[in-house]
Each structure stands twice: as structure tokens, then as C-alpha cells.
Length: 263
Image 1 (cartoon, rainbow, N blue to C red):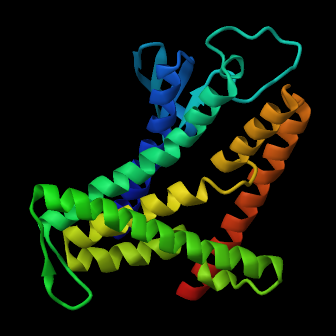
Image 2 (image 1 turned 135 degrees about the vertical axis):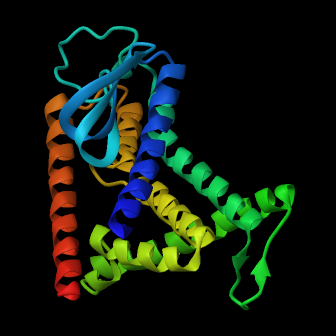
Image 3 (image 1 turned 60 degrees about the horizontal axis):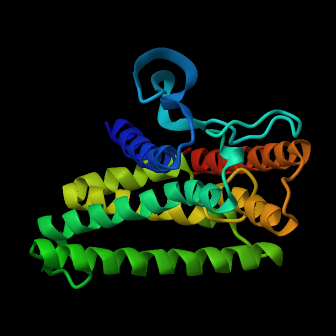
């Protein structure tokens, strides 16, 4: 049961992120070919809405969005008006950060709900606010948690550059399942609080200037703005492929460590 709830929580957070990309892309007239629930291979097409196919995929983890032209294929191909590459750098940057903002706003909503339902604070007293007070303090909590995560991440990166980073500080999906179990025992408020923490983490980590992440894509947009011409597709795709491969390797290492700890 704990594993199923964790998959649901993570999937919702990823879908919120991808929905942010999709809606902002559509707002600026960029074609969105597919919004997938889960990871391919494709199981079935659910429906089509405003030119976008909504699909159900076999692996029930998160989802994805296919934005037309987001990954360049050839510098000689003709680019239509609804192509991501056709839009100015400001629009491209807006689409890229939309997922990050969506996760942050969703965390704000979750924390506001937590404060309305009531949650036990650090002193052991019950913290429960009215609607408008919960919204305000939910916003403050989102900012405080986000800043704490940024500081911790900054320290970890600094240590990594000096060869002092400890991978034991990183928790993978399997390790997070244990946290879900603990949160479930403490009630719905703690589960929502946990989901908010993960959502804030996703928003911040995705802003890192690393290939394959939204932050890495933003670096390309900035470089293209300075150069006033696109980065060659071969370089773009090669860098993103390498970045994605490194992320997969890191995830496998962390997952293996989580499993070894369980054993």
C-alpha cells in the first residue's frame, strides 16, 4: 500500500510539472503533440484536446509532454510558427520554467491545505489556521523550505567539487517509500506535507544548470541569446544525451545504495 501511495504522489507531482510546460506552451501558440500519463511504451490513446493527444502508458510513473520542436533535429529544416524553436528566447524560457513554477505553486497549495487541516508543530502543539491565514503562512513556509533546500544543495555541490560529498545524503525513490510509510502513520496532513517537500525539491533541482534538466535547457537559451543564433543541433542533442545518461547512472547508484541499506 505504501509503495502504491508513493507512486501516486510522485506521479501527481511530475504530471503537475509537465502540465505547467504544456499550458504555457499552448498559451504562446506552440504545438503540443502529446501529454502522456506514465512512461512509454504506449498502452492507449485516451482522448485528443486542442491538438494534443492524451495517452496512457504502460509504466505508471509520472508522465511527459512532447512539445513540437523542443529538441532541434536539423539546422536546415523549415521551422513553422507553432514550433518551439520559432519563438523568441523569452517565450522559450517561459515554457522551460513553467514546470518549476507549477511545482512551487502546487507545494504552496498543499502546505496551505495542511495548515487548514492542522498539523503538529515542532513544539508539539497543533498548528491550525483559517483559510486566508493558511494561504499566507503556506506561502511563507514554501519560501522557507525552498531556501533551506537551496542552502543544503549548495553545500552538497560545493563538497562535491572538493571531493567531500557524501552520497548517503541523497535519498532515491526506494528510500522515499520509507518516508511515505512514516507520513501515513502520522495522518493525511503529514502525507500532504511530505508531498509538498518533494514538489519543492523537484522545482529547485530542475533549475540546476545541468544538461537534460530545465535549468540546463535555460543555459542553452541564454547562450543562444548571447550568440544571437541557435546552438548546432548535434551539440545540443549530444550534451543533453550525456546529461541524461549521467542522471540515470546517479539514480541507479542511489537506488542500489537504498536497496543495500534495506537488505
